Length: 74
Length: 164
Image 1: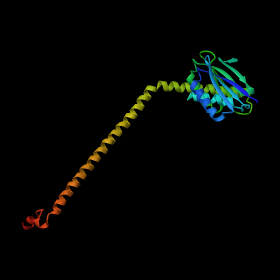
Image 2: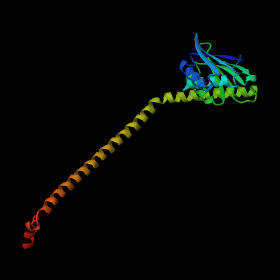
Image 3: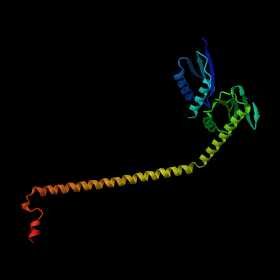
Image 4: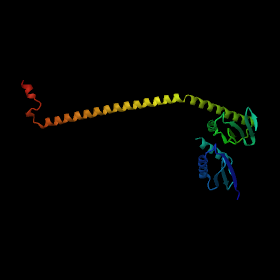
């Protein structure tokens, strides 16, 4: 089984934990159980691990980044 | 990253991406956020701050076709222009904040006074209605008393007037 893993790093000064949590919740609601999300904190960065059973579709990561930023700005 | 007019820029035409740094002493974080909000429909945006006082913005076009270096630079230019626009707007708002507060509070107070006046007028109308109803009720009572009496008893004293 082909799995794809991505690690996204978000600076805690620019992205709040809450906005990332809400983004994960939103994407989980759409893509679970095919795509698994996990967030941890490493120093001043939040790390979001994304593991997918299949290849992530084009623009998936970018949409995730945009949505996180959008929630943060609101 | 190449530096041009103090803004370090990195082009990534394969990914339709341009990355540049912004000095937060000149472009505060809040203004950068607001600018990102304007561009978020057209671009994929990622922000980072590797060191204090600096924000790195990565803008990636959502368009499928490959953009040239000039087109990517144009996008950066538009972003910076919008950033200036927002900074100016923020400055004007800050400068005029007290005046705006006075105007708004004046309008709100005026509308509250108007509401109170309407309430008082409403109450006067209601009082008048109550008074009229009481008047009608007492007249009805009088009428009932008169109707109870026999006409021969002459309750209204008409005989006296007619005989005279």
